[in-house]
Image (cartoon, rainbow, N blue to C red; front, side, top):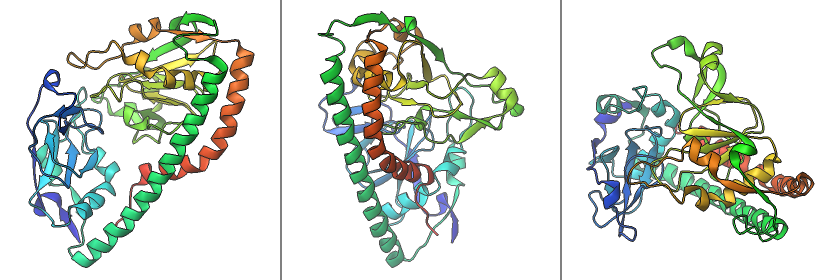
Length: 358
């Protein structure tokens, strides 16, 4: 039956912990909105097997399920005193992930208001036997997805091994290739957000990519939830096929430097820097940047704000092997990608469509 979330569960935001107070080897994860934990803490304020909803930022509306005690921050809702089968509630909400993203309000810093979350409607079956059956089926589906992810990781390791064999470790540059600043080999473009106050900037002309669409393990960005109109594209930032999109503003160091390769023309927001290669093969550059993630993020201070600015990115130095050698490596990557393609299609379909609960 159709219900409002506030009629089946209670929900509240957690308590803030300053990022400079987080403990590297803390016992409990600290979830402050976002897709992933922001760090570790030495205490918890929420019990295990809890559904969470990211409250603020670019990931506001993201549904998560935490299977261990954790500390919930002030930019994250946690659900409590609701259905006994919390996993079923998670799947019921996750199936409506795209609708939840649309609850966002606020142009500069999107957020989900408590009232809007409570009034959110979803399909919910109160029969516990049916709930258990659905959870069992979807848990098995997730195991299959996890196996696909493992296969992708192994294929990525194969690509990395071939890269090191051909080019060495990029930073040490044992093979003596030329090294150049990124600004001298690529064009770097910072995205933006066309004014939300002007409705005609948004429509169905070009996808507007956010960091949520840059998914680890997937070569290309997932389909965006929002699109710009033709007028929106005139004031927005766009790149064509075969450009790199890099997450440069994020709530955790793990998310900064995450990249994908565009397979279509897209617009993108200010949390993303696009890198358009001028002296690189696109697949070589993609792997080079993935391998160099620690180098990209080494001087970022998360206590201040997790930002890899355009100016810092442009000054980073990378090897520039002969284009013939880059192309040879690219051919190898394309052969491996044939094996990855079907796995990526399955994962991407799951991420985009979620799970369907009738």
